[in-house]
Image 1 (cartoon, helix red, strand yellow):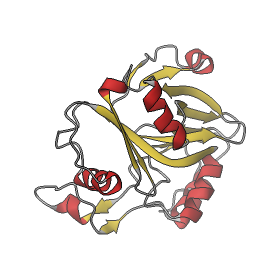
Image 2 (tube, helix red, strand yellow):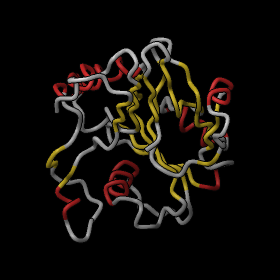
Image 3 (cartoon, helix red, strand yellow):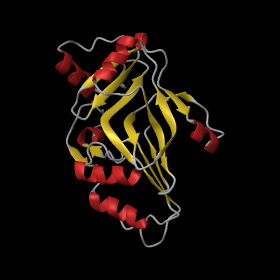
Image 4 (cartoon, helix red, strand yellow):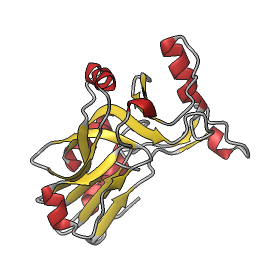
Length: 222
């Protein structure tokens, strides 16, 4: 990858998770499998940053530096993008019994809690880099992961509408003076709040983080 021959207007980074052996099967089983290729490599990232001129906008989205990117590369990317990953990712599922729920998630839950995955409705699932899992069922949710603009975001994106977000997101916090332009604001029962508090998961966290000086954006949603 050699991008720095001339300055680019925009660099957009997505889907760096990679390809795994299960992805190549005719019937994907949703199990964790051997990595064929994936994760951001430090050489690749350095090439990207060499190609980023003063007027280049750099955008990265969900999982650009999370698993399976190695820790050293992740730290460099976090600094460049003015965010810090908590290690947690999450997703709202409209139906926790559906095939959308990967088998590894069910297996990890049953191993952690020593009971079956017996959910019958929708819910919000959090997964940590350590494989710890937290499930908040619909009965404890007042809303389904609202995406809301901040005041600064509303000024910049006057045509963007607030909505509920129903796919993967990671939980980050801004650093290096970055500004949050949109955020996810969770609303749930006190019991569910205590579960998240015990795991150091905030109820409000960035959806769009922007460093104006560096011309970078991080989109926490997939």
